[in-house]
Image 1 (spheres, helix red, strand yellow):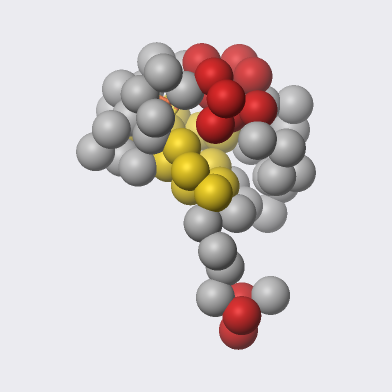
Image 2 (cartoon, helix red, strand yellow):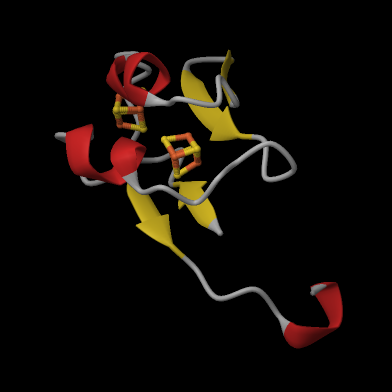
Length: 63
Ligand code: SF4
Ligand code: SF4
């Protein structure tokens, strides 16, 4: 799953614009990805100039 580091995110909105699933939401000055709607396409990671988005392994019990 893709996650946004809220310490690095500037809420610029570029990832929201790039996301084909419309699953990124802005909250209190940073953005969060709704994993339920995320297609794992990686478009958001590619556009984030802050390097705030990364792909993380999901613990096996959550799969
Ligand atoms: S592109 Fe990066 S810095 Fe901009 S809102 Fe998305 S995660 Fe935050
Ligand atoms: S990986 Fe793709 S679908 Fe998921 S949040 Fe990023 S841009 Fe949206």
